[in-house]
Image (tube, rainbow, N blue to C red; front, side, top):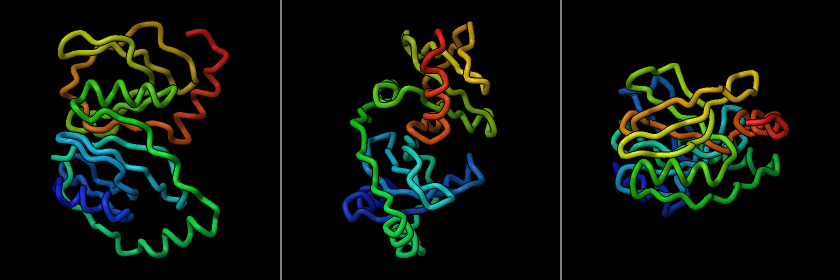
Length: 180
């Protein structure tokens, strides 16, 4: 799968990513970086607008349509709407910790997913510190307030890291003036 992801990046394909073993949905986007374990996708949302970035594990991809069968339509719709692809942030794909830290450097908030354990759950916030195979994470609740306590998570449970999407940015804007 890694070679198909690299080819999609090289040719700038709009792709459809399926991770059937852990997620019933599919993601539309453009592959912007590929590492050994993780790859970075510029997400194109359901409303055919750019909507942040996702880091996904290479081994979770069960199907990659590259290019997507409706890529011409999607590209034309983006063009007509004046949508410009946001520049890809610098993300260190060396390992899970470096990928997470890079995402936190690029965005005010990140969404963490552990679909193998809890497919319908995520946590939004920021990494505070790491210690060995685990990290401390300050979470934000749906009311845009910081949780008092830090959550502790092992790096190995992460399956996806989203950042710079409209929802995460909206939470960050409301949080801007609130104390951490």
